[in-house]
Structure formats: C-alpha cells, structure tokens
Length: 585
Image (cartoon, rainbow, N blue to C red; front, side, top):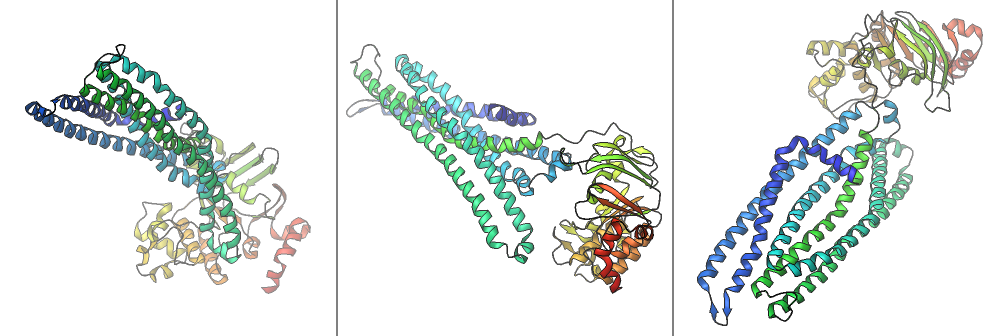
C-alpha cells in the first residue's frame, strides 16, 4: 500500500508550487484555528464572578477571535484550491501515462484484455484515485498539523493531562489499523469485480444487434446478475469494514475526551495535587484541544475506506503501466527502398507456447504478385498478416522485406509500406473527409474526393446532408455496412503503399458494388504486391499465387488451375465451398 501511495505522490513533482502552497496554507490555517481555543479560554476567564464580567477585555478578545476565524477560513480555502489543482494535474499526468503506454504495449496484451476493463481503468479507476487521493491527502496533511499543534498548545496548559491523552491515543490507532487490514482485500476484490462488470457491459452494448438477433437478452441479464451480485457482495463487505472504522474510533476518542474532562474538572477545583491547578478557561481550552487532537484520527479513519478504494484502483492502473512495452526500435534504421518483394524463411509462431500454430513457413514473394491465402477457419491466415505487420513478432525464423529483416528496422517505417482493408470497419467521430484522410492527415480536399471516387464512394457521400462534411459517430450510424467499408477502402486509395492487405475486404458489400470495387482494386493493385484473404471465388481465381494453409502450415501453393489439377486439399476445399458459386455463375 505504501509503495502505491509513494508512486502516486511521485506524480506530484511537476506541481511543486501547488504542493508547497498547500503545505504552507495548511500550516497557517491550522495554526490560526488552533489559536481559537486559547482565545475562548481567555474569554471564559473574563467572567470573574456572578454579575462581574470584564467586558472591555472580552470585546477585544471577541474581535481578535472573529478575525482569527476569518483569516483561518481564508487560508483553508486557499489550501483546498491548491489541493484540487494538485490532484487534477496528478491524475491528468497519470492518465496520460496510461494512455501513452497503451499505445506501446504489444498487441498480444490488448488482445488478451477485455476492452471494457481497460476503459474502466482509464476512466472510472482514475476518478476513484482522484477522489480518494484528494480527500486523503487533505485530511492527512491537516491532521498531522492539527495533532502536532494541539500537543504543543496542551503542553503549555498542563503537561500531565497532555501525557494522559497521548497514552490513551494508541488505542484508537490500533483499532483503526486492524479494521484497515481487514478491509484491504475486500477493496481489491471489489475493484476487480467492477472491472469485470464494465467489460461485460461494454461487450453487450457494443454487440446489441447480435444480442437481439440471437435473443440473447435473458442470458445477458443472467451473466450481468452474476457479475453484479459479485460486485454487490464484495462492495458491501468493503463498505462494512470502511463504515465501522469511524464509529469505533469515535467511541474510543469519546472515552479519552471523558477522561480528560474528569481530570481537568478535578484540577480546576484544586483537589488533585498530582495533576496541578488550571483555571476554568484553561479547562475549556484543554477540552477543545483534546477534541481537536482526537478529531484528525476520526477523520483519517473516515477516509481510510476512500484511500483503500483509491489504492486498489491505482494498483489496476499501475498493472497496465508496468506491462512491458514493445521493444524500443528508435535506434534502428528505417526500411529503405521498399520494392514489394518479401521472403519468409522457416517462420515459427504460436500464441500459446505449448500449442504450435505456424511451425515452418517459407514463402518467396515477388513485386506485383497477388497472393491469395485460403484455408479453413483458424488455419493461420490472419496470424500471417499480424506477423507481416509485426503486430506480433515471430518466435523463430525470419521475415525480410526488400532484403531487410523486418526485426532490424523500425515498425513505423515497415507499416508505412502497407495499406490494409479489413472485414471489420472502423470509423471515428468526425467528418467523412477526416475519416478518409486518416491515412494521410495532410491530404487536400481534392485528393480526398479523388480517393472517394476511385472507391465508388463519392456518389453516396454527396447525397448526404453535408456531403464530405457530414459528421459520423464512431460506429458510422446512418451508413450501411457496405458504405462504411467503401470509406475504409477510400483511405487506402488515398495512399500509394507497395504492399496491400485485403482481409475479407469486400465481404460486407453486395455483388453489384463488389464488381465496381473490384475494378477499383484492379487499378489500386497495379504494380503492388497484394495479400488477399477472401472466400469469394472471383478474387481467389484471379490471384497470381494461392497459398493453401491449414493448422499454420502451407500445404499447397500454386495457381488455381495447377492446384485444381493436383486434386489435393485445395481441390477438396474448392469443391466443398465454391462449387455452388461456380454453378450459379
């Protein structure tokens, strides 16, 4: 816990002015507030006897008292202002570190995490850290100053009663520490349950059409109830331990206050020689100080629950930040003279070490070739694309582009050589022109329009209310799946990469649109090396070379006619999957 807190505090270093200001204002504000009981005690002593009050002196004390309270409130407000700024800047920097690190972790890590859980760590966990950090930090700082200040003032009034207070105080601390220890594990479990629930909600909302299409609503509710119940149980347990801390410490502190009151009253009457003699005003001041001395312990124990929750959330955030990033390649040279040639030599890869996927893959690709990759689901088609782009690194062997090992060049320069259109469309909140220009932010409007025309998207774009300035949401609401795919294809039309990757790029487009897209692809693929993952017969038959994959291995390779003549795996796959399509044609 202390390690996590120190790590959070390390993010306050850029805000030294706010930190120093908060400490200074807390010291002044607390010091003035602790001077108030002295003034109250002196005011009480102005009452000498019945009908005998020193009003001139009393009025002077009241004026000083009012000014002291006002100035103390001002400095406490300034302290809160600095604390708020400190917390806001700290969480901002922490959130930036988290988001920045997510851009550099291997894709393997992202694929292995629930999206909703990662979103929860970047949003809700950050808010919990901010709230817990702000409240706990303020209470701890003011609490420490209050405890030290009250001790000093009490010692000036009566040393023996002060020692009594100090001796009894550890009882309150031991009780709070025991309850804190019991609640720590509950808050960790509650944070994990909150992340799991967030992941499920994001999954269900993001796939609502699929949920409704398969009448999955009831089962979704049942899964939600399981996660929700777990969160309720862990949250209730954590809240229970957090809620009993403050009442228990208040009870112990009330006993301390009562002991001080009894001893002080006896000392005020002069009946206890060992304690000494104090005035009634000093007794009033001492009781106030005794209450203020124990109050920080109550407040600190009260924010323990928030602090525990914040620490649990911070652990989840730091778990992501501590995840190893991709190896730094800034010292490597950029890929030069990318001419569309590629060699794969004895490539090995597996997602799970004890489950080999690609065992010994060899391929020699020439410039301008169109390579179709076919095979049953899970054969390694998409995995191969991930390796070509270095989304994943090979476990053995080597992949070379233009004679250069891709492991020895920067990832950015490698990926700049590829244009990729996937089956799953991705659009972001912004205008259509901005979405098309995602591949080239510096593209002119004329270039954007030209790319849209080449992708046969210009027509439907101009029919939209604001044309190219029509703003889309991240899921492209208002557009058909085919239209969204056309926009993604237009992005690639805007660039001129040596390599193209088309992963089921036309699977969501009707046959008539596909024919128009194929014409655009013919123009786009001219002179470029293309990797095509597709099931459409026309695309596969027109490929220069076909790789037939199964279980990570290339079983056969050649042209469509040569593979059919072999009457092997490809011929059987063709007959089972494409015979009907050929008959229809």
